[in-house]
Structures are given as structure tokens and as C-alpha cells.
Image (cartoon, rainbow over all chains, first blue to last red; front, side, top):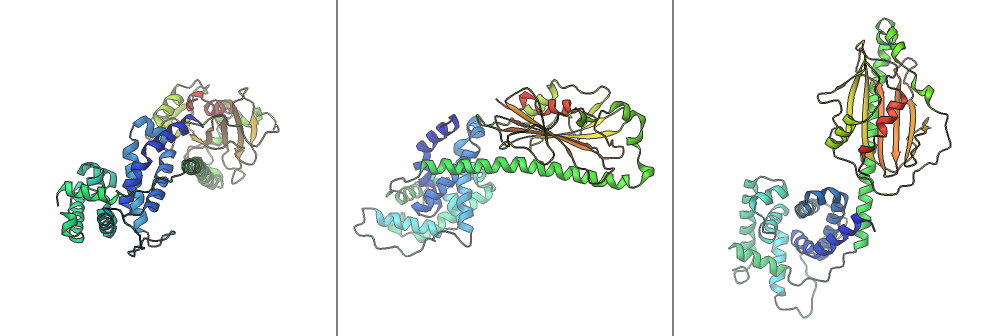
Amino acid sequence: MGDRDTEFAEFLDSRAAVMRRTAYLLCGGDWHRAEDLVQTTLAKIYVVWSRLRRDEAIDAYARKVMVRAAIDESRRAFRRREAVTDAVPDVPGRAPGTDEAMDVRDALRRLPPGQRAVVVLRYWEDLSVAETAQALGKSEGTVKSQAAKGLAALRDMLSVEVAL
Amino acid sequence: MSDEDVRRLLEAAVRHEPPLTLDRGAVLREGRRRLRVRRTATVGGTVVAVVAVVIGLSALSGAHFGMPDEIGPAQRPAVTTTTTPPLTRVPPPTPAAPTLTTTREAEVLPPLKLGAALRDAKVAWPEAVGRVGEGAEWYAFDASRSATFHLVTADKARRLVTVAVGTAPGECPGDGCVEYPTGDPRTRVYVRELPPTEPAAPRAVEVVALRDDQVVVRVLESAGFGPPWRTEPVLPVATLVGLATIPEFAAR
């Protein structure tokens, strides 16, 4: 394995789990899709690894690639893979807190992809408005507007006892 | 809903996380595949662009050659005194393996460094031949790692030179290519004369250097935007080869 592959593999091992959590939220709560999204993102990072390593902008680039890939996939009319449905299969013996997690996941899934991405980047990745705008390629005004709409929609969808 | 509320909800959503099953090998394979596609597309795009320019110029110049009164530059005495038929110095074809053995991964330099390498290269330029860029210094490379400049002779006639640097698996670039001996086992150089679109169309010569680090340099001399253009090449093949084999074009 060459230097490039070795360094990239180290990056993959250290960030894959964190990236998958962000991808999971961006996908609206599907671990399989999240893992696919992470794999796609990592493959794109591999292509420009030399430049990213020099610029030390790996995380920002990874975030940008992943969020845009997630939005693109969400907007496709026909997905080649199975779609996520509202019907949740029976799961025996839920762990404590599972209901709340499912509620949040369902609420996230119902958000438009752009709003969902803004909420995830602002409140999960803790990015500023400017950084979120840069990652999404949108204006700061749009980010503020979508964040407000996304939060309002989450508030409406989640029950009072869960949300507040 | 406060910011903290939102963060708490998002944390709740990822709380029951299954084990990571990401296949590191699959990621690397997919990454390498994308890298190959990208490199092929880069060099392929450059070649297509260069060929398109050549065909376009040849067609344009050929139309002029169809009108004998307008054939000026190629008939002037200065042409015969300054021009050496380049392919006469090309050695006969030698049996060549179709591909190079690559030893390490290529790293193409950014345009500024490529430009500096071209500017400072120890290349035997013919005397009394000027080099003029197109809206920039003659040695300036654009974002696609391509530099285009005009060769201007004393009679103001022009030729066009394009130097493109990219990466790709090494192989003979097309029909009619002749291997040029460089004495450097790490670099294989091919020379070929592009077939003219019409009998009197300007001649174009292409040199392709395939290096063992997968960096590919293509140098094309063709007719300039004319008139006044020059039909015959100005640069000897050795100079074109010198341009194609500038060592600083790759970070070895």
C-alpha cells in the first residue's frame, strides 16, 4: 500500500464513524444509506487526496461533498435502491429512548433536503451561518431562512414532551 | 426551541447506532477507479481539444489554399531558409511495447509551476523566432494544464504551439507515431505528423512523451491563426521533444 493509500486509510479509520452519524442525519435516518453516502464521499476524497492534504482542508471538503451528495440523492425522482417508507417494521424490545430517536428521525425525514442539511450542519456540525452557506453553496440569507423554517417544522412535528 | 434542544434531539436520533460495516478495501477500490476515470478524462479532453483545434485550423487554412492568389507566407523565400523538415530527422520506427511499465504514481504540478518550468527550460529555440502568448505570457498554463503560444518568424508568419501536461496510462498515441530515442529509459517519446485534411493544408507535428511516472506531455505545432500563417513547421523535432521532456513538468 503506497503512502497515499496509507494516509487515506488512516483518515478513513479515524473519521468514518463520525461521518456516518452526520450522513445518517442528512439522509433522514437510514444507516444503510448513510454508509453508502460515506463510501461515496470517501471515494471522492481519495481522488483529490494529494491536494486536500496540502491544503489541510479535508474536513471541510468532506462535509461539502457529503451534504451535496445527500441533497442530490434526495432530490432524485427514482432511486436505484429501495426507498425509505413511513412504515416502521415491528421491533421487539426497544431500548430506552428508542421512541424519541424514531420521532426525531421521522421528523428529519419529512424536512425538505435543503432544510434538513441546514439544520444538520448548523446544529450537529456546529457550523456558523457563513460556514454552512459555504458548504451548501448558498447565501447566508438563504441559510438563515431555511434554518428558521426547518426548526419551525421540527417543532410542529415533534410532540411537546419530546421536543421541549 | 433552543439551539441546545435541537442538538439534544439530533443526539437522540443517532443514539442507537449499529456497528460500522464500511469496507475499507471497497472504498479504496472505488477511489482508485474514480482517479483512473478522472485522469483518463483529463488527458482525453486535452487531446480532443487539441485535435479539434488542428482540424479547425487545417480546414480554415485549406480553404485559403484553395485560392492560389492568397497563398502568401508559405511561398516566401524566408520559409525555405529557416525551416527544416522535421520528420526527416526522425529515426525509423522501432518495435515498441504498447505500454510503459509504471513505477510510481504521477503528480502533475499546478499551472504556475508548469509555466515556470517551461519558461526556464533549456530548450534550443531557433534564432529569430519569437514566442508570443495569447493574452498572457507565452509560457502561461491554464487550469487544464495547457499552454498555447505563437511562434513568430522574421516575416511575421506564425505557427501555433500547444503544450499540454496530464496523466494517463502510457501507450502509443495513435496511427503513424514513430518512437524517438531519448536515451532516458524512464521516458518514451513518440513523434507523428498529423495527416493533413487536404493536400496543401499546413503540416502539424505532434510529440508525446510518456514518462514512467504516468505524466504525459503532448506538444503540438500546427498552423497559427492566419493569415499570416506558416505552412511548414518552425521548430525542429528535437526542440519539440525537448519541450515534451522537460524534467520539471512532474514532481518525480
